[in-house]
Image (cartoon, rainbow, N blue to C red; front, top):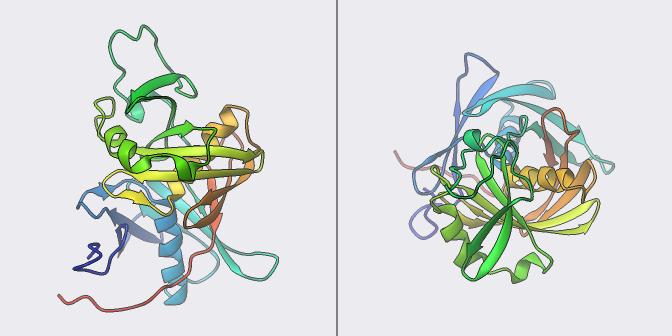
Length: 252
C-alpha cells in the first residue's frame, strides 16, 4: 500500500481498531512492514478521519497506541479553522529506556543524554540529544539551514548505527528564534519524510532543555508547521491541522 509506484504511496499505514482501554485503538505500520510505537502526525490524521466519518462524538477522547493512551482534542484557531491537539506522553531520557546502548570506553554514565554525546559520521562530528517519545529519537542542532544538510547520506547510517539496538529516528534542527525552529527528519523504517510529529516534539523538548527555545514553539518542517508545547513536567502536546487528500478502496 505504501509503495508510491505500485500502491497508494504513503509514509505509513494507520489501522483503526476497537479498544478495551480507550475510545479507539490505533496501530501504525511503516512502509518496510515494521510497526511503530508512536506517530504524532499519524494521530492527528487518525483523529481527522474519526471526525470526518462521524465516528466520534464530542471534541475530546482517548486513543490507545503501543506507547500508551493518548488524549486528543479538537480546537479552533482564530480563523475558526480546525486544529487537532494530541498528547504525546512524557518524554523519556534514560538511555536504557530509549534505548541507547552506550559504547564501552566512553568513561561516562548518563542519566540524561542532552547535548552531550558526540557521534562522527561521514566526516561530521555531531552532538546528539536522545529523547524517546514512545519511539527513539536522536536530535542534532546545526547552524546551517537544514535544507543544506546531507540527510540522505547521513540519515541511513545514523538510523542503523550500532549505538541504537532498535534503530532510531534522526532529526537535524536549527534555531530560528526562541519561538521558531526548523527541522528535517530521517524516520526509522521509512526514510526522509516531509514531517514527523514525535520528531517535532523531540526537537522542541531537547531545545528547551538546552535553554535555546521557549515552552511553546512552532516547528517548521518541509511538509508544514506544527506547534509543540511542554512544561518540563508533564506530557508534550502536538498541535496542528490535518487535511484529507483523497479517498479510495483497496482490493482485498
